[in-house]
Amino acid sequence: MGDLVRFELDGAVGVVTLDNPPHNLIGVQFIDEYCAAQERAVEQGARAILIRSELRHFCAGADPAALADRTTAMDPVEVLDRLESISVPTVAAVQGAVLGGGLELALACDFIVAAETAQIGSVEVTIGLAPLLGAVQRLVERAGPARAKEIAMLGRRYRPDVLERWGVVNLVVPDDELPTASMSFARQLAAGPTVALGSIKRLARIATIDGVRAADEALAHELAPMWASKDVTRGMEAMAKLGPGSAVFEGD
Image 1 (cartoon, rainbow, N blue to C red):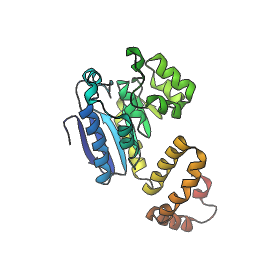
Image 2: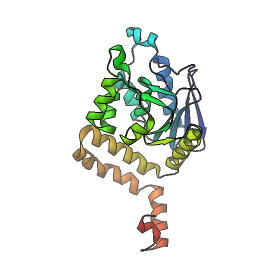
Image 3: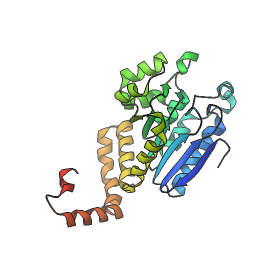
Image 4: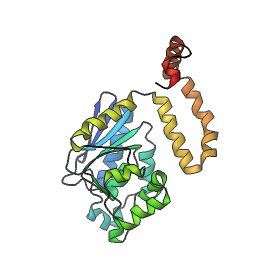
């Protein structure tokens, strides 16, 4: 892997570790290695991906030098397409500063698990910029337009519990439990039916971008590989053995 982002396979979970001291600031090389690490995880058979940092901060935003050098600016559409085309579930485990582009990396994941002392914010407005890597759109998707505008226009740093209530963060845990809780979250996804989870991910994205009707129309295309999957075969066999009235039918 590259110098700024590490990758390893831990069972069925691909672990992508941000390692650009001291604050994991984002530049062109960093973002390319970040995308490549997730793509490699899928190529090597990961069934879920955990994004994490061993540094004090998850990511404190863009490298000022990268912002100033417009000749090497990254294409945000290309970057987001690479990240959101990842076929398996992605979980961001965030702590410390999760600011600007750091929040945008987390928002491009399917789930965000946050340490309770993390400081999270879309702060680009403080230097006269709008978010550059899709934060506004993805905050609208998660929290609605009113909250998205509040977060992006005021440029504040928020406590994770506030953003959990608003639907931006999925889970808040004590700082010392973040590694275990986020890995447990990723392992549960990795143990799930891969084909179905991939379909759910794609349908949710289609509904967000093109609306519910478009997702309805895409459903038939998604159902065929699900019905043909080994996961469904095993699930149907288990259901037949349990029979009607068993716990599986009661939501347990």
